[in-house]
Length: 515
Image 1 (cartoon, helix red, strand yellow):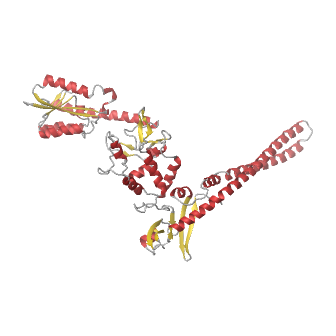
Image 2 (cartoon, rainbow, N blue to C red; image 1 turned 90 degrees about the vertical axis):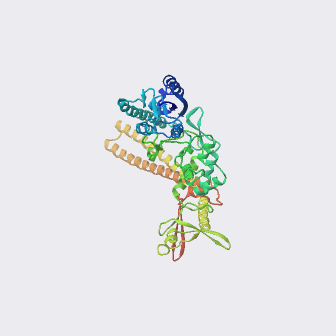
C-alpha cells in the first residue's frame, strides 16, 4: 500500500470500568495512536479522526463509527488504526465480520496497536488469536455489566434513583443524583391531568386538551430542556400527547412520592429492554416529595378500575361511565345521545340490546338526568342523616363506656371479696364446704361480669369503626348540589337498572350502609 489515507478511531464508554477510565480516555488513545503513526506510518498522506465518546462497544450504532464506514465507501480512507481491538468493538462476532470479511473485501487495512495486530502482514497465528481476543473483550464487557447491575440493584433496594433520566415531573437533585426533586415547570400539568380525569374526562380527551393547548408531551419537553432522552417505544413522528402517555402518568406511583424501579430488564448488555412483571418491581415509599396527594391518587385508581368506555373527543364527560349496569343481562350500560326540540338528551341503554337487539335483552333506557337526581337525592338523604347518626352513635358509645366502667368496678369488688373469703377460710371461721360453695358463686358472678364487658367492648368498637368513618366522611359534604366523578368514586358502588312489565327500576348501591 503506497499511500495511506488513515482513519484514527477512538471510543470510550462505561463498559470499560471505572478503574480503566484514565488509561482508556480519548486523550490517552489519541496520544498512543499519534506516536505509532509518527514512528511506523511515514507514508500517511491524510489523517481523519473518528471519536465516539460515551458509546458502548457491544453494538456498532455509533455516529462516528458509521461516519467512518461511509468514508470507506467513498474511498476517503484505506487504513483504520485503533489503540486495541476493544476500542473497535466488544461484540466478537460483529467485530470479526468487519475485520475478516467487510474490510478485507474493501481492501482496508486494520491496525490494533496494543494487540500487535496489523492485517497487512498478519500470519495464520495472528488471524487465529484475533477472534480469541475479541471474544475475551466481549466476556469482559459482560462481567462489567453484571457488576454494574448488582450495584444498581443495591441502590434500588435502598430507594435510590438509578435512571439516566428523571421521569416527567422530576429532576435529579444537583447535590445527589440518586435523589429526585419536583420539576415545578411541569408539576401543575401532572396535577391538571389527575384533576381532569377525576372530573370525568377520558384519557384520550385529556390528551386532546393538552395538545390543543400546545403543551409539549414528556419526550418533547425533555428535548426542549436539552436532554438526549429517547423514548424507544414511541413512534418516530409522535410528538404529541397520547392515550398511552396519559395512562402511564395516572398509574405512576412516582407522583405520590414512591420510588418505582426495576420495571425493565435487559437479557444481554445494551440489548432491547423488556418489561418486568409487576411483582419484580422495586418500590420504596416516601423517597421524595409527592406531586399529587395520596387521597387524589387513590381516587384515580378507583376510577381506573371502573373500566368505563373510552369517551369521544366531543362528549368527553360521562358521569356514570363504569358505574351503571343492566340488572338483567349483567352487561355495562352504554351512553346514548340524541337531539330533541328541547335540546340534547343523554341517556343510558343496555349494551346487549344496542349490539344484538331485543332477542338478547330489552332496552333498559334511562335518562342521565333521572339517574343523577336519584343518586343526588339518596346521597343528600344520607348526608342529612349523618349528623343525627353521629350523635346517636356517640351516645351509644358513651352508654357502652359507662356500662363497661360499671362492670370493671363490679369485677374489682368480686376479686376483693374472693381474697377476703380465702382469708376467712384460712382463719378457720368457715368450713371447706362453705368456702367452696361461696367461691363458686363468686366465680359465676365474675364470669357473667366478664361476658358483659366483652359485649360492651365489641359494641363500642363496632359502633365507632367503619360506620362512624363513613358518617364523618359524608358529613364533610354538608349538602351536595351537583354530582361529579370524584363524589361518585368515593361513595357509589354500582347502579343496577332493571326493566319489567311495570317499567324501569333503579337500584342504587353505595359503598356504605347506614341501616
